[in-house]
Image (cartoon, rainbow, N blue to C red; front, side, top):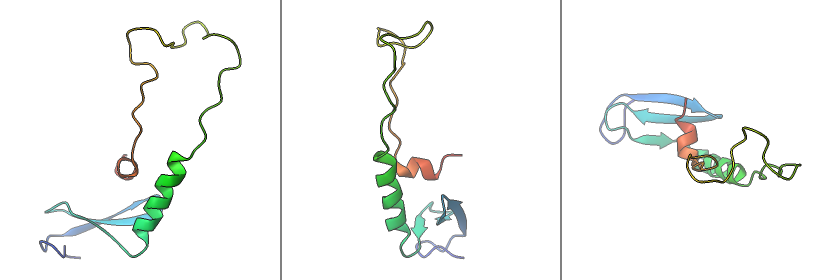
Length: 88
């Protein structure tokens, strides 16, 4: 298959049931009909997931991360659906 933009070779990747074509030359990403909607629906479901339940006891257990100064505990960057597609 040839890239419609630069005529480079295309590769097909399958991620979460979605087939994604990517050009080896210009790195363009191409989707088939309906796949953008599928990706959008997956992203909505990912972000709508319920938060984890709060701890049952009053304070952190020994060795558990807490909200004090220093360290990077509890600072998780929210990933987008694009990052999920190309993560290994």
